[in-house]
Amino acid sequence: MGVRLRKLIGTVVMLAFILFYALFAMAVAEGRITQAPKLVQTLAYIVLGLIWVVPLMPLVRWMAKPDKP
View (cartoon, rainbow, N blue to C red):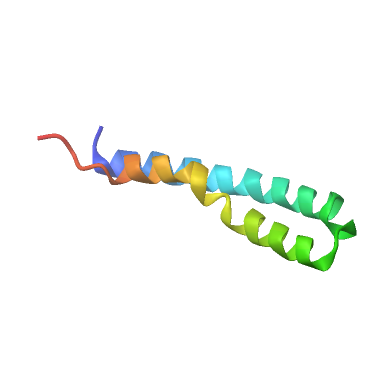
């Protein structure tokens, strides 16, 4: 599989994941975090805002892998 095809597939998967993750994060933030103390809310928003990167790192590595000769 060529780099261009991997990047196309990876981009589509990444956009779909981010869309569903954003909906999940909004549901969690709206449901449980609103009653928590301000410090807990701040930490939760920071974690929710950054945690989406972790599951996408293997996908990014796969997309960046060079072609085999």
